[in-house]
Every structure is written in C-alpha cells, then in structure tokens.
Image (cartoon, rainbow, N blue to C red; front, side):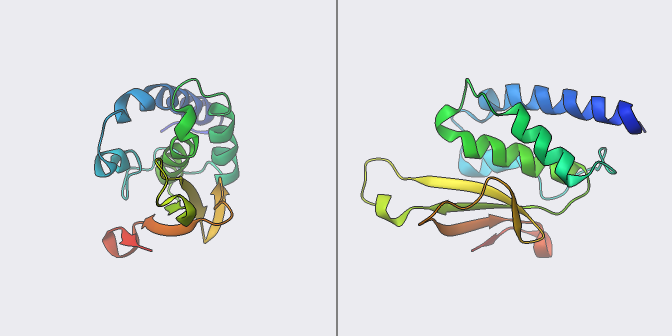
Length: 144
C-alpha cells in the first residue's frame, strides 16, 4: 500500500478522474443509482489522509465546474462523501429542499456532507428542510 507523497498523488489522480467522469456517469440516472457514487461501505485505500486534506482537495477540484453547474452541490457532496469514505471516515450525505419552491416549476434542493455532525462539504442553506440522510448507521440509510 502506498504511503506519504505517493498516497497523496494517487488520491489526487483518483479524485481528478472521478470529478471529470462523474457528470457523465450520473446523467439520466435515478436518485438511487446516483447514490451509488456515495458508498455506505467501501475499501479504505486512502486511510491515513486527514479529513481536512480530503475536503480541501474536493473543494479545489470542483471549484470551476464546466459540467453539472446547476447541480454543483450534488457533485461536491458525492465526491466529498465518496472520498471521505475511502479514507475510512463515516460521513453523512444530507439532502434538503426549500419549502417555498414546492409549487415552483423547479424544486430548489441542496445537499451537503457532515462528519461527526458538523458540515464539512458545503452546508445547509437558510430555509432548507432536511429530507434525507445517506448514512451507514445500522447498515442502511435513513430518512431525516
């Protein structure tokens, strides 16, 4: 297993490739199929990398989206959750909606990643009502 600078280099390459391929791989997929990008259980090839390093790398990688511009939080959330999980952390991917948009032509939704109950990738927006948590507690995800 790689350690030190080699581990970080492998991580950055994997993150970069995942960020570029994800928009193509989630296009036209159902919510359940999209959540496969945020595994509840996985190998931990990046164990030893600090959570802050992973979050900073994800934010840097997705800061100039040319695909998924209108779903930026989903891209950040899926990548953040995925790579925190690959490093052995136990993140939650949370989803919320703005109740004022319920009767609008387009629903205003948002997602963010929490680690130990604190938002680390994005954060809940004002007025958002949490509707779902994607988390490995008790072996399956649970509604909020």
